[in-house]
Image: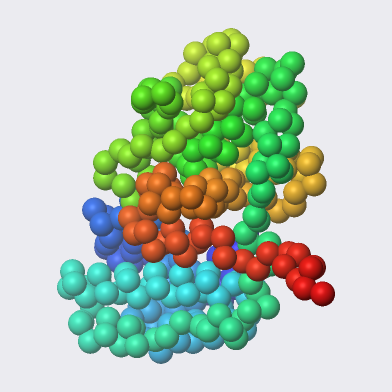
Amino acid sequence: MNTVDSLPAPCTLAPLPHFDANLLAGQLAPSSIAIYQRDFAAYVAFAGSLAALTDAATLARWRTSLAQETSLSPNTINRMLSAVKRLIREAAVQGFVEAHVAADFEQIAGVKAAALKNRIKTHARVRIEPTAMRKVCDSPEPARLIGLRDTALLATLASSGLRVSEVATLQNQQIRAKANGFVVLVRGKNDVEYREAPLSREAYTHLQRWLAERPLQSDYLFTAFDGRGERATARPLSVVAIWRIVRKYTDSVGLTDVKPHDFRRFVGTQLARNNLRMAQKALGHKRIETTARHYILDELEAGLTDALY
């Protein structure tokens, strides 16, 4: 995973009062502000002085440095550039820099994906077929307590379309019966109100079995084990721990480079086959175009020319 840890740090700059990602307080969620803070800190380190920091030419030079001296993907580089431009724009709104400074920054274009296409990983998205997903979800050992938890976790990921951060903080009170099935009440990264996400009956059954066997109470559905996985705790699983669990079981059935988000893509893709609107609602996308762009199966299928002659 590309991070700013890959970046050179030619020099550092003392923190500037009132001039950081906290300018966006009240506009973005804390998790998003943290990402802006990280990206802006990398730019501050590159700039080295206040005069350079507020010079649009410095952003252009930083863009060149990121392209030449790091292995970051074009998408990551453009995200970092956009973060700086948004903060400078907000700084102008709040009177910390002149309006023409923000206008100059807006003129700095991002890098072209085609120019750095060799940095885009071919396995950035792993498509999981239903038969493979079934193998993954059946992989944990049902005779072990940790196996019950992992079965419930995988079934929830595979049927809800939740983001890994949402699953990590999931609590029992968020599970609701509805009609003849179940839903999860979840508030995503850009949501103000709670929304409903689907949950399969199978996942619900596994959850209830896990919770019935868990030897202690916790507000969280998915809790960690200490030691060699035999001592249950009330501590919620971290996002990193869920990544490791997903990688463990997908590797065991021959799938490589699978991420928790690929489970979300699986749900969206399967639902979009029949009803794009339901896929949009299940994933919590504000725009149906987002669902159509990322979850409609329009890739070339293998075997199309097998019977042409």
